[in-house]
Image 1: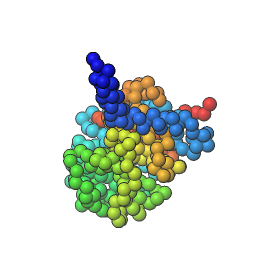
Image 2 (image 1 turned 180 degrees about the vertical axis):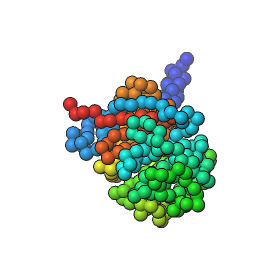
Image 3 (image 1 turned 180 degrees about the horizontal axis):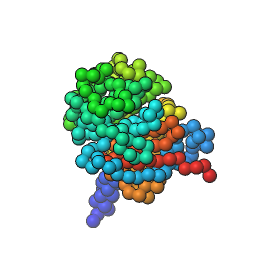
Image 4 (image 1 turned 90 degrees about the horizontal axis):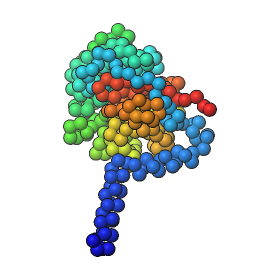
Length: 296
């Protein structure tokens, strides 16, 4: 092989490796890891600091083996979690210990991919296939959700290929808005003004996360700092964003890291409670609890 051919072969290999690294967003992850390592103690204390979390519960939710859990939200009033199923249209209440408390069919829905607990007894769900956001009230005795009883339904107006629309949904109380995550093309977080039970105005693009993850599966907001946590299923990644939407720290959802016994196969929902405990669901019916390790 001539020196010229050898040289251009190395150039092609280097370009291929660079493309693979960027495709997996490993280059951005390496920079974020370096930023983490240089962060001051005060900065860590002011954030969730995801690297300090460890998985303390990893279980399968009984009775949901044939469902596809998608998204998760915490209700501070009841101290429970709510998930939606993307297969059978269901709203599912779950205890923080992983007990299924009730299953509520949702009439008129087709592919639920987002859920958020707002204020009072109000909640919202997002239907990816129908590109629709629905608001409703829920009570302890609610057994089913009927479309004709919804408080409000709005069309999101983002026609997309199947399974590439809005997935994550979260209530940002501090800024009186809903956050909506666009799965792909682009991997974007949007904001939508709300009074806590209805939406108003138009969607506003907040941040494109495509440089850090290949898809966006879910969002949640830390009630203490106001920081956003974004979940990527494809990238096996959980990232904390600060008030300027800049990534500050992350954890990889892979076996052997942060107490995980196995890779989280298809992470679809994430939620935080007022104490900072972190909850996660994965298709089909896997449930995880992460807690902050005690300071040394």
